[in-house]
Length: 376
Image (cartoon, rainbow, N blue to C red):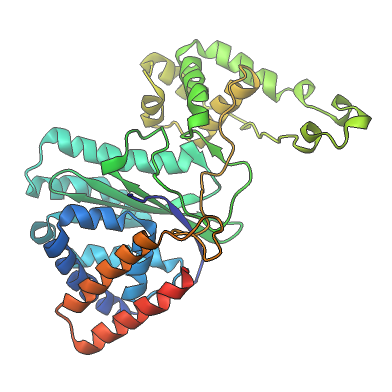
């Protein structure tokens, strides 16, 4: 089963020393060469989109299991190691300002692959939408600062991006894989892996949010005057609840103990709402694809959908598991030994066959062995 999703990582200051990064580039290239030769380019893309495989791979290169630098440095090493013309796939984007060059890099490399204009546009659209979904449609408190887009000459792609929660100083990584993704706005992650569940996460890609998606589209396609009326109704003081709304004998009632706190954005860009109304998006994906539609707009429409029209979106964190392959005691679910063994065997075979020195092989295999007990 293909895996894509997220992993929570603590923030570690500092950066990888140059001597280590140089060796990471050489080792990653050697392993990639073997995997691409033995299994093909599509298999490498599938594997790198698996959070567990990615984590094991980065540990072999020299990182701790839970280090936040795993994402940025491993992707940086991959970007230097991979030759788009030789390997048949390319790594674009990166951390901070480098991530803003993703679209230009996609376009430049795609031309060397002789891809059609339609394919290039689709790849660029996929890069933009993956970032938009994880920044706006899934509001979990993590702001994206790293975006890597890996694509092959046959048009398949992977996204590995990371966001930071500045209150907890934890990072969360998001994995995407085009092969098994049916829609950007309907549960695009095949599996989501995290260490901590967040409270009250707005997930507009969840199955439960489908009716709220429809209401959101209907709202923006209606006259903005009506939307503004609904928004004002919800932000006026007389719409707020007090303890008087619940009777004293019901203090132990489940409804009382689960009173929801829903934060409506303080302001909405009404000129943008007029632009959206003139555009008339056909569906929720088209609505999100409009430039300027961000987290505030998504949240306001979701809350109006729920509080005025009764269509409640999902407020559950889409993180499903505490670890990528399960826990040794069966919590949150039993270890997927087959998936775990396949990942380890593939990386181990890649190291064994790689054209590197014996010392490098021994060190890499030792790091892989150290990684295994941490996941059992």
